[in-house]
Each structure stands twice: as structure tokens, then as C-alpha cells.
Image 1 (tube, one colour):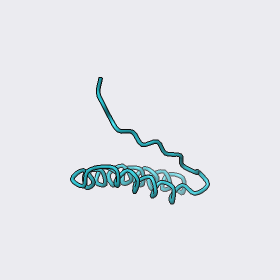
Image 2: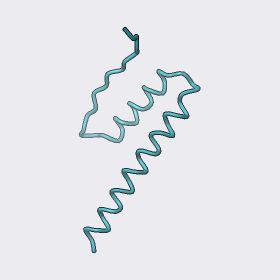
Image 3: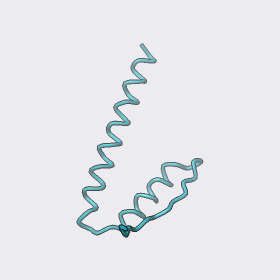
Length: 63
């Protein structure tokens, strides 16, 4: 058996940006300081990919 720590979150989709920011803060506050930069860089990459896909979609729709 492997022991692990879990954090359960509920996100109110009526206010997703604020809720996600709070979730990220909760996670960062729950992990070792040495891991925080890695987590934030991974999130930055995922957000960049999502934004790039969104911008590609908008370009295709408007042309």
C-alpha cells in the first residue's frame, strides 16, 4: 500500500477563475516549497497550450 495525501476541492463554475486560483493556492500551501516552482511551471505550460488552442480556434472561425 502506498500512502498519499489528497486534497478534495469543489469548484463553483459560476466563478471559475477565482475558484481555480483558490484551488491552486490551496495546493501550493499543501506541498513542500521546493515543489511549488515545478507545479507552477507545469500549470504555466498547460495554460499556454490551452490558450494556443483557443487562439487557433478563434483564427479558424473568423477567417
